[in-house]
Image (cartoon, rainbow, N blue to C red; front, side, top):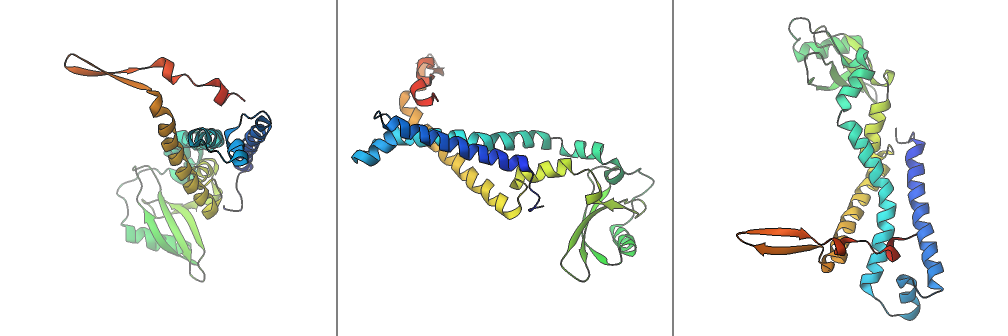
Length: 239
């Protein structure tokens, strides 16, 4: 599936890059009036690290917003991944419990009898009695693999995973690697590291503003939110 990435994901990433580029362009225009701290620092050699960090924090945060939206929406769907998959693929994922389940060695043998060009590489135990058994096959002549589902009560192969509705499985891939295979996994890993840096820079930027005020009254300490300190400066966030 690495070569079949869903276009919407790449459009989202492109939108994030475009938004960042637009903000940088805006910063360059501000430079004409001596406003942008990054280009001012490059030109004059005078660095105000806090203002520069604030600009980078803003740019990275806006670009990361698209990434977070993708992860949040796909993650919300995956909370009910099994339920959605059962509803979309009842012929593959659901079985009728009928007596006692066959021994797993018997299931393996019956599957290989029906798929002579393949051998069973791995069997995943079903979560419920009416769930089918997920089986991974590997070719006897190459390193190719397949994913199928089988009835653990009869040993009957129910079908190939690729024959089913791929919607939820694709959403799963988007969540873990942007549906782009190993390259997508690296993007997710670096983006996660960027979000960590974003959090740390946010703490550095906002903690000196005394966002939280600790007041000791009586026996219990109370934390009061200083509303005035948490108001965002529109000159920093305005576009």
